[in-house]
Length: 232
Ligand SMILES: Nc1ncnc2c1ncn2[C@@H]1O[C@H](COP(=O)(O)OP(=O)(O)OP(=O)(O)O)[C@@H](O)[C@H]1O
Ligand SMILES: [Mg+2]
Image (cartoon, rainbow, N blue to C red; front, side, top):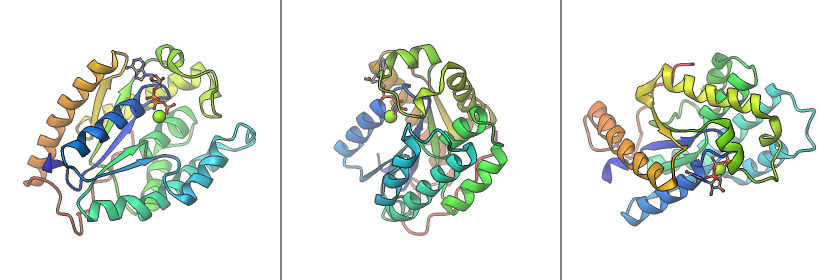
């Protein structure tokens, strides 16, 4: 479990993929093992970010352009990185993030039409280059995800089956472009099976990261800049 110190792990995937369910369980599990865990969710996670979240998810804001949307997600993320993520990594915590730049690449990129290069470059500006060690992608088909979601859908969730199909493809193309930096999980299975797959996959990826860095975890202070993920 000390391999998790100063690691930055993102849980991501389409709406209704069950990422938050597994996120909560993994955060609880890691804390029970004595790990210092910093949990963040997007958009939001800070006072400023929650205000941005309100604007983004308001069903009244139908006039919002996809470029404006992308920049608002990045603005919320910029605040989150500086206020919570960087300080947590510096003190040696495991940062667990429910969504990050991978979401913007899937929703505003592959599904929304913005170029992945523009999003990646904006992401570097927003985060100052603070990128995750690993992105766990909970993969689910649109029909299964739609069945799981509540009938009270927010603005992002109301966008329809074709949009959500493209979102899924957006996540899969990120995984294909850089499988080492991602853990792809079949999230259509029962929660208990998803959980077991997640634990097994994370253990393997943490081994890979330790081997890559040649140590148990990243040093708590002045962590080295992470490699910037290739745009899919
Ligand atoms: N493996 C699973 N099988 C069936 N139902 C599930 C599974 N995982 C989660 N659920 C249920 O599906 C719904 C959505 O789960 P959850 O909130 O974890 O998804 P999410 O990916 O975080 O969605 P969102 O992007 O909307 O936040 C919840 O009602 C949850 O109980
Ligand atoms: Mg969620």
